[in-house]
Length: 377
Ligand SMILES: *[C@@H]1O[C@H](CO)[C@@H](O)[C@H](O)[C@H]1NC(C)=O
Ligand SMILES: *[C@@H]1O[C@H](CO)[C@@H](O)[C@H](O)[C@H]1NC(C)=O
Image 1: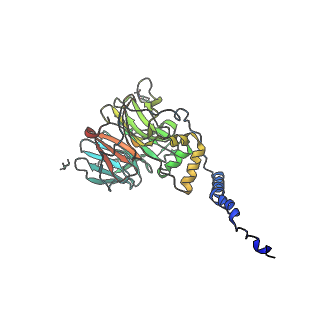
Image 2: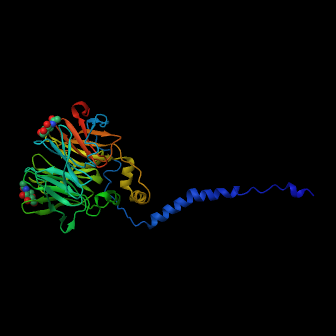
């Protein structure tokens, strides 16, 4: 008679809740990710990185691993994304291209900043010719020449019928020939991450001869062709191949004229611009370190596809660190390494007197490091 009262009430939901929780916190995101992955058409390629992944990067005999500690900021707030640096000894002026389209001039003796010429595009590589004109690799416009009075002339914006999409690095030889790169004929500067993630060689190293206005492709199929520097003896030109963390050497005289070989590989970072200092050394700006996760991304297209999906739908995690500058001699032997865990997207470096000036696409100033006080040890 009291049976009914002894039946305990069924516990509501409890045993059923956990599969539901499992489904929401685990299955739903995983299935969504798989579906997104499956239908994502972005298709990264295998990269030729068997010589890079798993091998130690080169080390320099002298190191400054805290280069920001002694660095001062020059022109703060007036120099958005100063990518590359050119210096005119006669006038004491630094030229740098900014992300507001201006080529700005910075007077080194008092750090005053002047807006000089607006290209209407996005100036990246800058170099002064012997005639005192500024040659500009403008990522949107192509290869430009700016006269001393500030008039802008387009030199070239295509080769073999293929337009440049990411004109990037430039230097000029004593005979007037301009050597420059188009990092990618597929992706624009703002999309450069997609070029890296896709892993196909859309970069070209080229020359432009102002005498006959001819544009020649010297090396094609490059994985993000970047900074360019002519050797002091005018016997070769070094250019950076960013994704593969190396610099190649293209001969412009002698027996090897017209051939290309490796200048330095296994750099401890991802190279951007390269500049010769007039004293036997090239200064290579490193955007970020070559980390284990970066190496995995290089090796496995599936990881790059995952990163591409994150880039598209979410926000890619900030993985860049330990950017800096790697110094090599004329044979490509390591000399010094300046870096800092807090540095990323460093893009250009120039030694001016006893100072190291660095530009970066990510900050609104140039940094200056006194090498007498803070030289690599
Ligand atoms: C810097 O150089 C300019 C041009 O040579 C000169 O007019 C100016 O007085 C100098 N400023 C300082 C602080 O030395
Ligand atoms: C190197 O080769 C280029 C093109 O093949 C040629 O125009 C140039 O004159 C050569 N330079 C030298 C110094 O032999």
